[in-house]
Image (cartoon, rainbow, N blue to C red; front, side):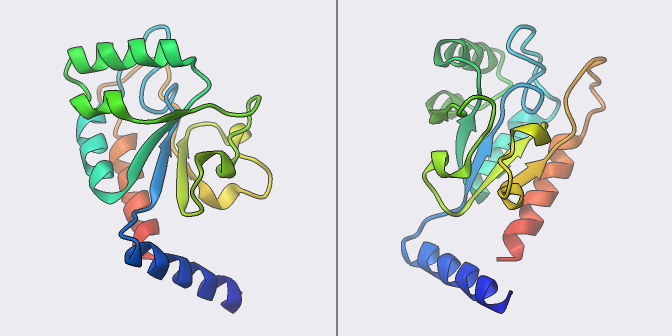
Length: 158
């Protein structure tokens, strides 16, 4: 365990030397929005993204097709529920239904997702769980605020 901890600290020091920040991979459906059909944004999405972008580099990790993601991003920007830079976030897609950490290309990364089933066995440490945004869609949903606190806590432990 001490060796693992030293390895993590070495990685953090290397990140600081290279001026890199951790990567936060964002699931789309059930996490940031309802789903790819209704596209209801989760309450607090805009401030969550702004704050998360200060803390981490961001990427979308979704099984939704690139064409559909682009359409969703355009709508969310048009409705002013996400920052304009949301359109420029890189997108990666899972292998089958599993979201492997190595696909994001970074060793220091987190996955924000509402589904435990997409996390590869043995990679649970990179998962930041969030309650699924599902019907009835409540304006009182504060999961993004709670999750931002979880992310900040995990980052402070580095």
